[in-house]
Length: 330
Image (tube, rainbow, N blue to C red; front, side):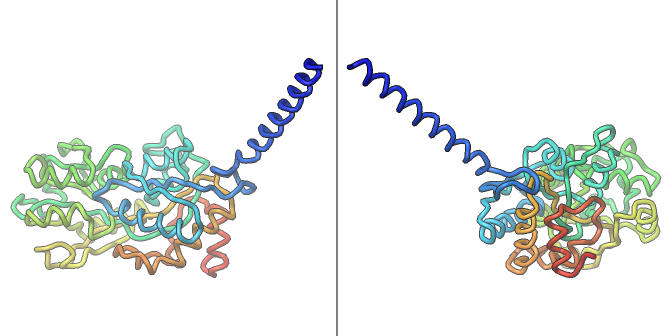
């Protein structure tokens, strides 16, 4: 009798274990989704840039909007910016990322930093604002033109950043190369810190103005921004159409009263194609319909109309759906 009861007990426990295992398998999609048929993820990661640039603080505000409007908890994480962010998306290490429009176009084409490694699983959410190429130095450096950078110690951006490519192309239209300067690969905070300490003479900083690192430098040092002359602006736009003419208004940084002419690319949000159409639609709608609540000065540039400008890769179907509904994409 005891053996019979023990056998029955074992059968019941086995049945319960099988039932619980089956129930546990039903939860496998709670933490993410795959393609257009997946569930809404509970948590996503958004890669931004260095903490002293524009991406990081703006990304923090946008992450809160996504969280508030969609219920998807979004972590805004600092990073080395554009090129590294694209690779992280490609390798499934994050779902969203800030990138430059030119850099992600290079990734799709498999050129420059992405030579022999074209990226085919990263899609566009939309453009955000102009990213201005700012050549930062001090008033006492004597550097007043791009040509004056020859022989100087110049930061050209962190490894993996779009800033490096911008610096290379600006030098190119001035008949210069990286060999003409003592190039240093520093992030924005390290660049301005190096200028303040006298370790470097100038730095290329591609970011929306005002940039926190430059403002910080201006609090202790008389900052100067090197202009790009009109003929060189025309030359770089002709050769690289993803650039646009831009102006840093006088008064943006303390001690600089006159407008500074230069060029800009665009900042945009990119997304992995693993997120579903519904999820990306809700994220896109949340960002572009709540940009008015963003306190960062770049929030005013984030509109549905601007969101479809300068995109050199395919839109994610969810973003495309939103922009078509908004009437800004055919």
